[in-house]
Image 1 (cartoon, one colour):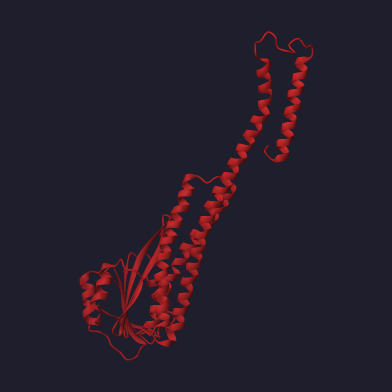
Image 2: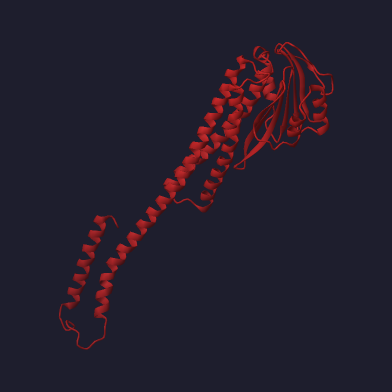
Length: 322
């Protein structure tokens, strides 16, 4: 059975459990409503809810198939909202989906691939009857806010990972696995941004458009959710820029270190070329070479080699090549 919880609430208090196949509860009092939570429901279960609560067939099809983008659809006097959940698994962001049917006297949630249960949220709301008494629009806000709050641990964990990469890039060469990790993180953040954009549109519509089941008093709550999403969007955009800069800084530092090594090798090669050239000249076996009979020629040549090498070393040292 995919039913997690189903209850009737009156003025913020849980009155009794309800079954998905019992007659539809209707009330003119917004403080009286039914809240039903399902996880991976069967088609029969959703069809039963469709019959008893008048759910639109297109919305039911979307809730069954899942794999929808975040959106808000209006069907008469009911709302259908799709929000995407996210969690970090083995350095990869995994996504789930929560479909929400909202009517004047009911709110039905259908979760697919979401690891975070709504049980804690339900208990939290039941502990605050004055807020729960606001009705289904406040519950809708609480569910979306609960989903958006799940984005923050992902961003914080990636932020710590990026900070360690940044320090690693400054201290030493990045290995191939670390460079691959940078590109994988950038790809995951790009996908995450493609989720945050539609989620922001969902909150924006609930804030600015005249929607059924949403009273004007609830709009500030959805505006707060919109602010949370935009803050996450800003952080994700910043992390993408930092990852790009980490790769660029690592590349520049690697080029600088390579250039320094090349200059050092060139400087020592120039210094060693002096004794090599002189020794090569005097190592030629010709009969009539000048200075072969010089009494102090050996010492003079050594002194010239030492002097020239010392001068070259001093010049290269002053230029920063050694």
